[in-house]
Image (cartoon, rainbow, N blue to C red; front, side, top):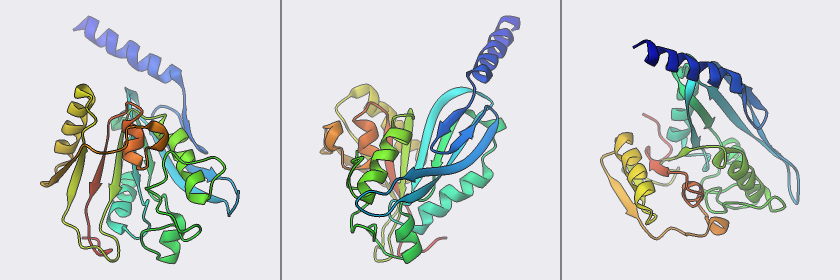
Length: 235
């Protein structure tokens, strides 16, 4: 027991010495929660800021990214992540959690379903994005480099848009990599929705990954997408 406690103390001390974790303008030291933005610069169209929260746990562990609001009128998923931001306690976390509650800010503000009204593109169809593309592509590029590539696991939250009446379900993306597929299966089951869609035809090219969860999976980071809520309502 002495050895176990000493090992645990040494690991926690080493974790504290690793210092802070930064995503966008949010920087959190161990045991802290920080808010900030992913600042998408102006290009062929306007700049934008995507809110981000970093929760740096008090103990060592992996990095989990939770992202919602690719479609800004899928309110159930957005509110779910916002509630988690308020509830999560860094002292109870092992590792780090990156939370992005609202990717498609203009869709939310203008109540435009499905697309980013700035460029008319869905913000879950243009990954891994382009640094010099339209606003959706620039935002996707920033999320890929700042969130996906810095995480170990990812969950992409969706829900029924204003004109969609969906039954809650999860996607289980089968990549053909047995080890990774076992992890994503366990993630899907742990999420707890009782309907699961198995997808085995997602793009395999990390440079043309298209979807957020697929962008993570093509980079060897287990990820799933989940759907809950309908017609823009929240229970």
